[in-house]
Length: 91
Image (cartoon, rainbow, N blue to C red; front, side, top):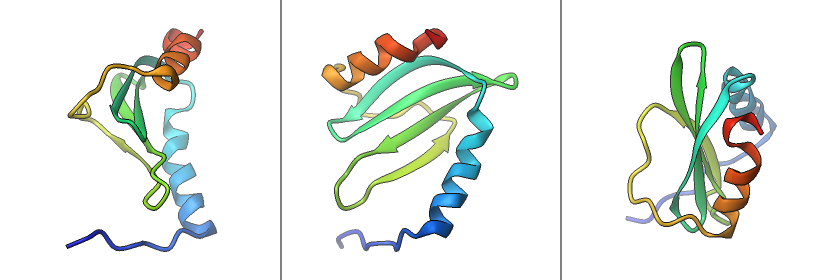
C-alpha cells in the first residue's frame, strides 16, 4: 500500500511551527542524514535532547520532533556537512 497524501495548508504549517518553537534557544549537538532527502538535528534544551527531523521529499515533505536517534544513517554528504559546519554547537 502506497502512502497517501495529507493536505498541507496554513493550519498544518502553524501547528508544525508551534511544535518546533519549543526548540528555540536549544543547542544543536549533532547533524545526521537518515537518507538522501532528509536530515535530523539533535537539539539540547530545557534539560533534554530531542531530534528535529526534516524531510525534503518532493511528495511527502514533513517536519517533526522525536526523542529517538534516526535509523539508517548515511555518511554526511555536502548538505549535512554544510549544516554541521554552520550550526553544531551554536556556531
